Length: 104
Image 1 (cartoon, rainbow, N blue to C red):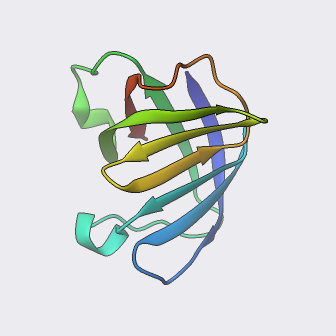
Image 2: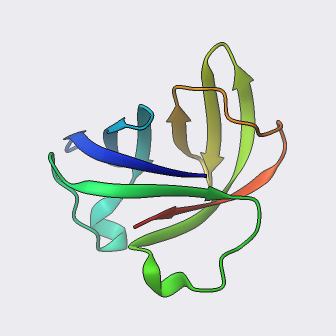
């Protein structure tokens, strides 16, 4: 699954909360300073969610894995090592599935 998104807001808290809109609405928590990535309102990006690890990581600004822990009520929630990715749609994923998340 690949979604074209625009960064709407990045807060200054730790970890940063990034609000995204486009093909879907999403909220992502990431420690941007610690991972050396800059995102700002207006930036365009692609959010990729896959069940298999991508062999070409060079195409991503950020690449990580997480566990789906909730699908229902119009939202999909994925835990990324304690950080959170909320996608405001029910994706065809199952609770407990490991997924790989890339940001291009």
